[in-house]
Image (tube, rainbow, N blue to C red; front, top):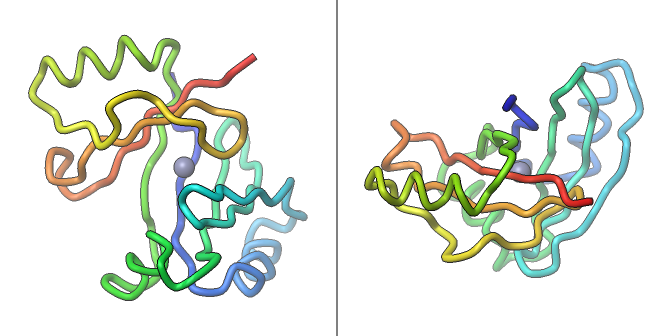
Length: 132
Ligand code: ZN
């Protein structure tokens, strides 16, 4: 449908929030912790898309590992879909590697699933579907 958000991995979420409040000239909408991923998120609204800052809540966080390995920067691009189950099935059929067997509960009240970056020219892609 459209780019729902761009996920940016940061080392220090509070610092990054201050930076993005200046860049975007607005206050953040909300922060939310995804316990299962040990990630704290902060959202900004930019038209129909959002910026999702991702900070680690501890050293074993996937975001900490990402930052250690690659440094801060774009972590994933999220596309909103109508039917995440259908899209996962379609992409599996096309030979893409899905990182989730079934959609999981993500931040921002979405069902999410990730497509491996090796299949997407180096970009981790998130499929997300809003829940009622
Ligand atoms: Zn995301």
